[in-house]
Image (tube, rainbow, N blue to C red; front, side, top):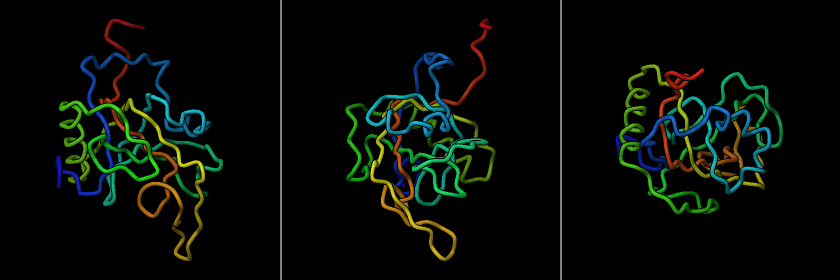
Length: 177
């Protein structure tokens, strides 16, 4: 285990020194990103979602999202695999040219610990580079799950978000309207 996270966990990121650096209009939801995922491939983006840690990794998951399309499997919620620049990244993903800030590693460890203990995990905002598996495909298995040809566990994830910065989602900046 590294940073309290299981081996094989792909998380990329660092925490912002100024947590208000992102303007609200610049932050995409996971749903927004999935509406036109191909256009974000290889680009730095800022995405808001729910942190979810599972046995095989950590994910940024959409909330109340009705998005459908080639990258969203029927009966599933749009989600991106999170990755740390220092960790091994799927061979089909580009390796980023940035490093994760130590404060973001601590924040990631805190979120993973909350998740491990069954505590509520806050929504997060992640700035990083998206890598899209453009030939994404998956087949439904008899048990109802999917096995695919893409990133992450069972190849079910069409996108990896390599974290450059990570912070808890916060409301409007104090003193602003």
